[in-house]
Image (cartoon, rainbow, N blue to C red; front, side, top):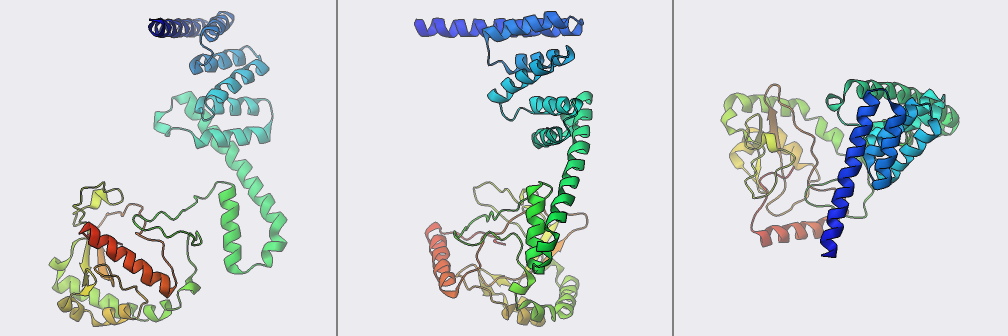
Length: 345
């Protein structure tokens, strides 16, 4: 009985706080800011965790030129919800109006990080967001110029690869560049360097492979002319699991493939159609994994088809011994499951 009474009392208090908040909104609409503040204070005495009441109190105090009181109300909101977009945006606009340029720019940056899409914003909020982008963008450009000017000498002593890493570090620190993490869909091998994009110099076999470009291109043209029906939808996932990366192209001819291997075994009649391609692929250091690789195909996109952002199945670049061990792990996993994914690139 005591628990029931407590729940009832809590519900009644919440309803009364909401009623006071609505009364404050009506007073604000009528221009009675003092009455609105009184109603909001009453609402917060009943329920001091009411985010809407705290936000409205901040807005009322701002209109009444009580800057410190408005900031105190915003702080209460951010104590309850540190990612409150309305509170972060109001704080930024107030800081800018107070002439505090750097704190305003930083506050705009925080607000923009949690801003909903533009089409979900009302007109005044959208204008504030657009202003925030201008202010934060200008601050970011100034900081970028300052940083690069200060490190110009040290950066000049770095190699081209090191300078690219420094540039990426600056951009990620300023949050003007996305941080790409390794997110393989199936196999994540721990302890490897988290390299976003490998340098060309790490692939010594690439120049030799590129010498076959013209011959490979001609074989592709010939196969498209002579055996176009051999191209099948690249993604053919029928397993009972979510298809995240390629849902819209699953079983779609808009992205098709002409495979030269079937579960690691060469398809002889297809390989014979493309001898230069197969010779070039054979020279690549592909791992041999039962039912998985080698792997090679021609890939074709229909006009106006876009491949959604995607990641590969693994993050491996390992020693021969590790490759052998991992090949065994993958083969054992496939054997235990009794299936092999239809696509694994």
